[in-house]
Length: 299
Image 1: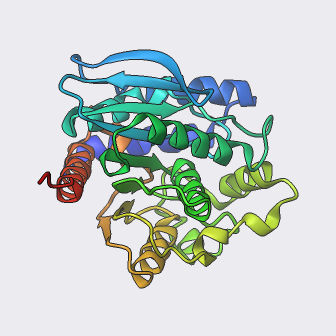
Image 2 (image 1 turned 45 degrees about the vertical axis):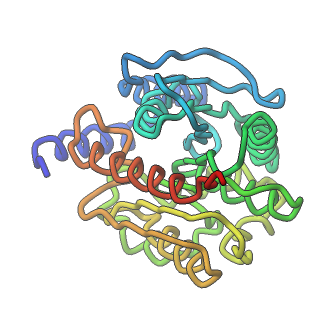
């Protein structure tokens, strides 16, 4: 670990947290500017398109044989497909995939379950256009990880095929904020605060407060192999641990990685942090290993 790299990132994130933007529009612009520092590999092309009518950013890399649906974070309120081309493109290049980054509807303009429905619609369209579900990986970070889990639970209820695997970075799955780390990790989290999460959860859920913890209460039986990466120093640590425990108890092939000293969605800092690059490489290896294992053998 480079202490200098990590300290510089911590200082920047704390500064952003202590000097919040004056409006939601400013927050969205600032978050996009931060995310766009991570660009897609030079041999990838990026175009605007749709999946089932849902806007997506298609990041196509050479020798693509698979599909990767990426759902970005941002507390359901900020973030865009363009801002996450870098992380999605890097994963796509490493897994011989074409990445589709979902531009789901943001809150408060569109409250629950609009974003979840957009992800489900995009997945259904990708499934319909693919040769098989086993060649599809779903990847998401933070609130995007919540949307993936919620959409998959709904997809299973509808009898839809499950993707080949799922990778979640720093998942936020408990919008009721009941995890112990919400309070025990506050002093070491350089990015998130309980107050910030509560405001985002309230804006997203509106009056549908019963949906706050449904992912952790759901039976996850039948979901695809799952990889979860979470930082040791983030208040959402317990969300990841509880989700992994719930999935494992349901018989889901689950891998949980707790990265020492890391912060919320550190994977997005790959251009300047070695642990980010290592985490993305681990995710690539997981996707490749699982999807190759699931590939049907021709007679």
